[in-house]
Image (cartoon, rainbow, N blue to C red):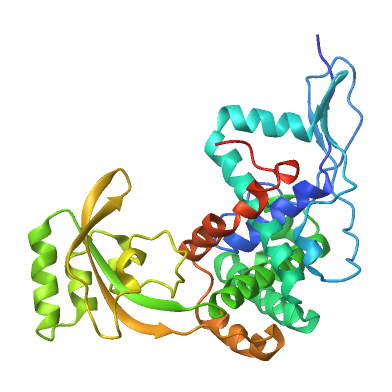
Length: 344
């Protein structure tokens, strides 16, 4: 028997779409369709149809404090859809995602945990984003998207139609989401880089290979004056070989295998070959020390410009994000009543 199906697009869905468009930018093919579809009543004997309600304009945030990274404490378990008299809620969507794509669901939880930790550290160290900086970065990214849309689709496609076709969002809503996500990314960059410069760090190149003899030969050549980065490009089995095995500077809490010996080396020194776990097996490693960086106990305000310049040339890497999560998520684990991640 036919029954009506209604899909309500909540603000959280809009934010998710905005995050995706920020990550993907242009270059993704536009979906079929043009103007916003009209929502018309359906006869009761018609086939079930999904009615998408365009999101209302997003409210302008009162400020850009670290709380923009935190879940809305007033949010209930909102309805996201309805099939006849069956109400579908956000918790149902997550439960279904967890059963169908568990890694994707848990990755989303990790992202929430990451944002909560960043917000707490921003509040603890008095880290705040400058609205003018957020606007400048978002405007530059928006201009880049506009340029890509023009290059890919020509004069027949403007940003408003592109955003609607791809995400079902009004341009004004997309622009609001872009600015919110820009501020969140800026907090993430500020916190990770500021905490890093407060502690002793080391920057290294590393090489990993399953054959001990290959690593021994590399170490011997480096000690005779060969360039470690060139040899890593040639021999390493890690994707970082494209950058000569270069790792972002890290502190003593890093879980990377290179950290096991990095702090025993001085600038320009290469380690002896050593074995360590790499994925599900043991591999042979060598590490070359590029620089030792002493920690600096300084207020955030005095290094904001330095961090801004660094982020402009080198964005936060997945290695840094993973290292931060591994080191700091214990703050949540120590407070069971505040945990948001399921047991793993």
